Amino acid sequence: MFIVIVGGGKVGYYLSRELIEGGHEVLVIDKDVARVQQLTDELGQDVAVRGDGCEVATLMQAGMDRADMVLAVTGDDEDNLVVCQVANRRFNVPRTVARINNPKNEDIFRKLGIATTVSATSAILAQIEQELPSHALIPLMKLRGGGFEIVEVKIPAGAAVVGQRLRDIMLPQQSLISLIIDTEGVPRVPNSDSVIEAEDEVIAVTKMESEGQLRAVLTNAPASRGA
Amino acid sequence: MRALIMGCGRVGAALAASLEDDGHDVTVLDIEPYAFRRLPPTFRGRKMIGNGIDTEKLLAAGIENSDAFIAVTQGDNRNIMAAQIAKYVFNVPRVVCRIYDPLREDIYRSLGISTVSPPRVGTALLREALEKSGPAAIAAQPEETAGSEEKAD
Image (tube, rainbow over all chains, first blue to last red; front, top):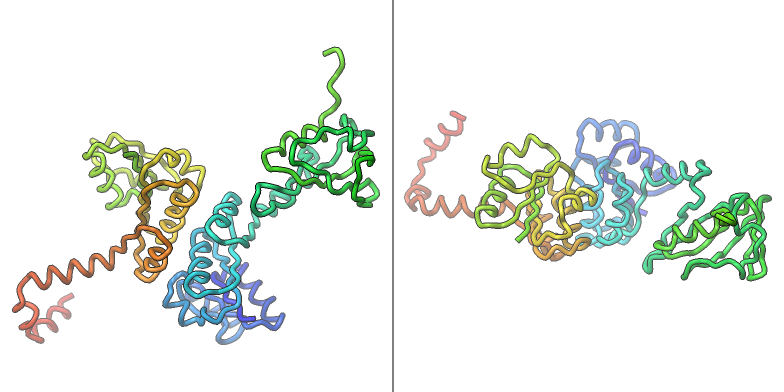
């Protein structure tokens, strides 16, 4: 594949090195002369060119019209957005990937036609959430369109649902428990007779707006009697 | 009309003052509070500090109730991204975006964004001014004069 990488910082450098090792044809575009020289010294001739990755003239010279994929990995979200849009709309590049710094931009990029985004910030946040026991519900993946997502819920020992069969648990509308992973790490697809145990991990599909309700149902302690 | 202007440079500030003079309700957004010095002392509109590609800042600046959004920061891509957020995420009825690079302007204009490219407009106006300054002035320019002026620069 011919892959154009816009942004020759650390991400761009390591990406290009790996991709070249993988046998791909790679071209890195960066605005900074010194950086381009450095990349040329390390990666070889004709791998890096100096230029503005958003400028049509630069991209034409770079052979953007025959690129199979464009990776926009500069440190600025707005630049990465424009790189992908220009590559896609002007040069008909079939696949574009944008690096995102502000996790809130994932949604905006999707609305503006850039489906594939990678956010280190989101990845680190997700990691933190997994490490924190207080975050009982972890969104795993947003499903495109329809407002659904897949979430993971760890069932606390004192939760009201412990020992209950699925058929007796009132889930929010448009929510479904699709997998139960027990403490041994063994996953099973549940049926209505499956029983939830303490410390089980539950994978569920839910509407995003029902997330809070689902968390409450699966993690809240039984309502105390007499209160 | 409620107008939200992103970028309080010379153009942003002058546009803000001009819209306000015509009775419009104007909010100006800039990442640098020092930029607001360009607004006239009589300016009564809101001055907000923040980055216009951050949706939270746009919400705080009242984009949901804005009738017009004008992106005039120094960065083409910032303007392009903010204008698209205004148009396609917040459905602002009037969105105008400044794009210096004429080639990029072509692309985004064809995608339905209202754009202005100052180099393109400026070139046309300069050309017109030059022609109006008298046909003799262009045609009969002696080469020596042009050369000596260049050296003087």
